[in-house]
Length: 188
Image (tube, rainbow, N blue to C red; front, side, top):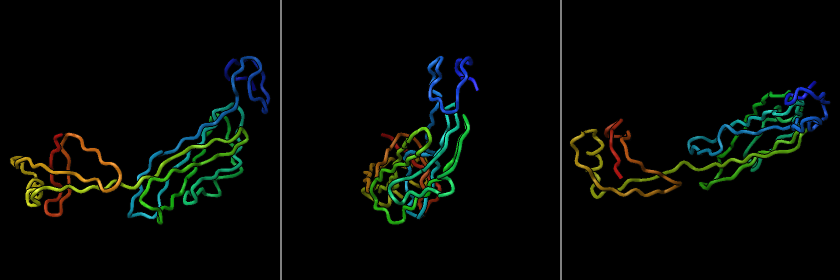
C-alpha cells in the first residue's frame, strides 16, 4: 500500500509516518453527539453517542472504552475487539443513569484505548433550568397571556431557581393552564 499523501512511498502496516513525505499515518478522532446534556427530571435514563473515526491510513484496533462517573455506561459488546479500516467510523451508545443524581452540574469523561494510543473526550450533564415569573398582580399575568394584542404591558421579575435562563426580545408561546398556547412578548 502506498502513502495516500505523496503516493510514492510503500508503507508497512506498522508504519507511523511515511518515510518519504513525513505524513502521520495513524490517528483517530472522538466526537460526541452532545457535549452539554440537560437532564430531564421526568426520565431516569438518557443516552448520547460516541463516534470513533479512524483518520489514519492503517487499521485501528479498539482495545477498551471506559467512562466516569459510574452512572455513564458503555455497552460491553461495543468496547472490545473492534477493528476499523482507514476512514471507518464506529458508533458507541453511552447510557446515562441519572436517577439518583443531585441537581448539580456533573463533569463526565470517556476514554478510548486503541492500538494507536489512548484519547479522551469530556461532556457535561446539567439540570434543566427552572424559573418563576412574579408580577405585582397575578390576575394581570393571566390576562396578558390571553393572546390579546391590546393587553397593556406589565412589569415583572424573573427569579432563576435552578440553572441559567436567558431572556431575549421577541415573541414566545407559553402554555398557561387557563389559556393554552398563549402568546406574549418579551422586550428588554
